[in-house]
Length: 317
Length: 288
Image (tube, rainbow over all chains, first blue to last red; front, side, top):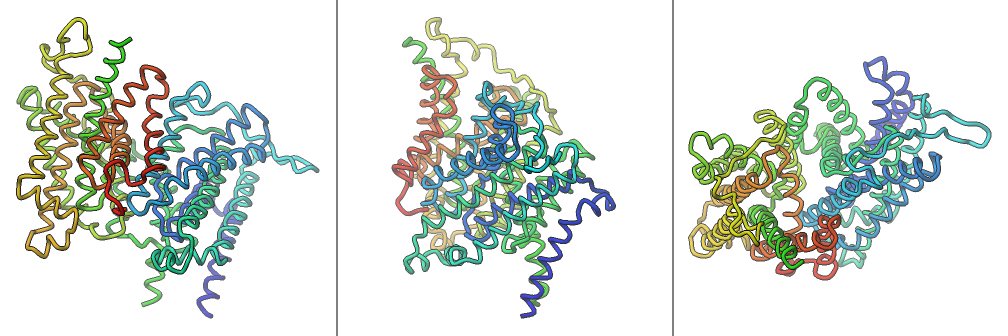
C-alpha cells in the first residue's frame, strides 16, 4: 500500500517538474530548448524501453524509425503541405509503416542475433538518406523550413518564436504518448509482454503467440519512436542522416540503461543526465566523442542497474 | 562490356575479401564469447594507423607484418581489462561497452593522427597494372587477394589442426564441457579475441593501401561484415567467408547495371535470407 502511494507521489513529482520546467530551468542554468530536447529524446528512449525493458528484446536500431519520423515530417512540411500536425502525422505513418514491414523479418530472432539485425536494418535508412541526395538532401539534410504555427480553429499559436509554447506542445505529445504506453503496460497485453520477458518458453507453453506479441511490441515501440522523431525535426527545424545513424540508437539504449530499464521513468532520468552532460562536454572539448565512449564503458562496468535500479535496491535493503 | 563486368566482379571480390576478413574476426569472437564486437571497425583503423607509423622504421613489408600483431596485442589487453568482465551477462552490456569503445577508438585515432586523410605509400612496382588490357589488375590488388586467401587458409588450418583451434571449435559448441575437461577458458577466450582482432588489424593494413587513411575507415566496412555474418549464417565460419565474398561480388555486379543501388543490394540480400532462411545460408538450426 505504501509502495503504491510512493509510486503515485513519484508520478506527481515528475509531472509537476515537467509542467513547471520553463520557469525553473533558467534558474538552474538551463535554457528552454534544452528542456524541449530532453522531452523529445526521452520519449524516444521510453519508446525503446517499452521493447527493451518490458518485453526483454534487444533493439539497437531505433534511430532509424526516429529519423524516418523526422524525415517524414520535415519533407512533408517543406514540399507538400506546411502544417505541423499534418507533417507529424506523415512522419509517424512513414516510421511506423517501415517498422511494421521489417518486424516479421526479425521477430523470429532472439538475443544478439536480433540486435545485430536491427542494427543492420537501421543502417538501410541511413544509407538511403545519405546517398539519395536528390530527394533527401544527402549529408546536408533537409533544411530551410520552419515549423508552421499551430492552427486551433479559433486562433493560431506561434510555436516557432515562442519557445515556451513549443515546449508545451512537446509536453502534451509526450504526456499522451507516455499515458498510452503506461496504459498498455497495465493491460493484459502488457502483462503478457512481461511474461515473455521473464520466461519466453513458459509463455509459449501457455499458448501465447510469442512472435506476434513481440512484433506488436516492436511496432508500438517504433510508433512512439517516430512520434519523437517528428518532434525532433520540428525542434531543430532541420533533420539530417545523423538522426538515423547507429550511434543515435546506441544513445537511446544507454539512456534507458543509465536511468534504469526496469523502471517506467528510468529512460527520462537517463536522458536528462545524458543530454545535459553531452551539452556540457561538447561545449568544452572537441574530443567529446571519447568522453561519451568512456561514459558508456563506465556505466556498463559500474552502473548497470541505472539510477532508479540502484535507488530501488537501496530502499529494499 | 565484358571487360567492365570482369572489372567489377574482380573489384567485388576484393571488397568481399575485406568484408570476409572483418566478418571472420567478428564471427570468431561472437561464436566463442557471445560478444558482438562493435569496435571491430575501430581496431581496423588502428591497424592501418599503426602500419603508417611503423613504415619509416621498418618499411612497407615490416609494417605489413608487424602492425596486425601490435593491433592484436592491444586487443588482448582490451579483452583482459574490459570485455572479460561481461561474459555471461546480458549481451546488452557487451554491446554497449563495445559501442563506447568504438567511439573512443575513432576519436582517439583522430586525436593522435589528425582528422584529415593521410597518404599511404605502397611500393611502386606493386602499384602498376600487370597487363594493359586488364588495367584494373594492379600488382597490389592481386597481392592483396593472395594474402587474404593465405590468411583465411591459415585460419582454417589453425582451427582444424592445432590444439588451440580444436579448443576454440569445441568451446563454440559447449564451453562448459571444455572448461570441465581442464582447459583454461579465460586464456582461450583471450587468445580467440586476439585472433579476431589480428584479422581486423590485417584488414586495416591492406585496406589503407587502397582506400587511404581516415579515422572513419572502419565505418564503411563494419556494417557489410554484419551482413556477411547474417547472410552466411551465425555460428559457421565457412558461411561467414561465403557471405562476405557473396555480398562483395553482388555489390560489384550491381555497380555495372545500377550504380546507385550498389550499397542497397546487400541489405536486400539480407532481407531475402532472413525471410527464406533465417539461420543464414550455412548456419546451424536452432542456434539463435
